[in-house]
Length: 264
Image (tube, rainbow, N blue to C red):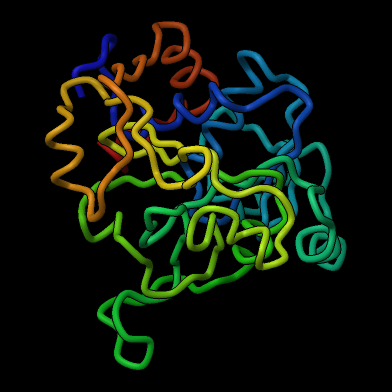
C-alpha cells in the first residue's frame, strides 16, 4: 500500500482503528474478528490501557496472548480478565442502551448512510451469497454509542447505494431518520477499507471521504464506490503506521503474523 514501514492491508486497517479507541472505553467484537481484536489490543498496548473489550460469542474480556486467536477459542480463557456467562451477555447486548461505547463490525455490504448487511446479497429467497446472519448486530449498531466497520475489500459490490438487507442500522435514510425511527443517539463513526478512511457528513449523514490511503487516488476511490461520496476539498493522505505501532503490533499483539497471512 506504499506505507513506510511496509505493512500488510490487515495491519494497516488495524492501526487506523486502534488510533480512534479511547482509554477506559467498553467495546464488543464478534467471532471472525482478527483485525478488530488486533485493533483493541494494540490500543491497549499503546495509549488505552484501560480499554475493556469483550468477545461477543465467547464472553471473554480482554484476552491477550500476544497472538491472534478466534474470539470464540477457549484458549482465550487462560489470559482473559473475566469470563461472562451468555445470559449476562444477552442482558447488556440486547437491552442496555449505551452500555458499550463502541462495536467493531465487518459486513458483506455497507451503504451510503452506514447501514450494514451480513445476511444475504440479492433476493432473500434466492440469494447470490449468504452471510453469517444478523446474530447480535442489530442490537449492537442500534444501542452502542458508536460503531466502526472494517472492510477488507473496497468495490461497488461492497459499498452500495442501498444494502440488500438492513441487519445493522446506520443512519437509515440519512438526515434525522435514525432518530425518527426511535433509535438512541449513535451510529457509524468510521468505515476503514483498503482505499481509505470514511466518516459521515453532519446534516446529510452521507458517507464522506476523510483520507486516502497511500497510493490511492480520488478517482480510484470514486470509481470503486457504488454511490457518490461526499468529498470536501482535497482529501489528505491517511497516516501510515509508524515504526512503533507496527513493531508493537507484530511483537506483542500478532506475533504469529495472522494479519499478514490473511490480509496481505
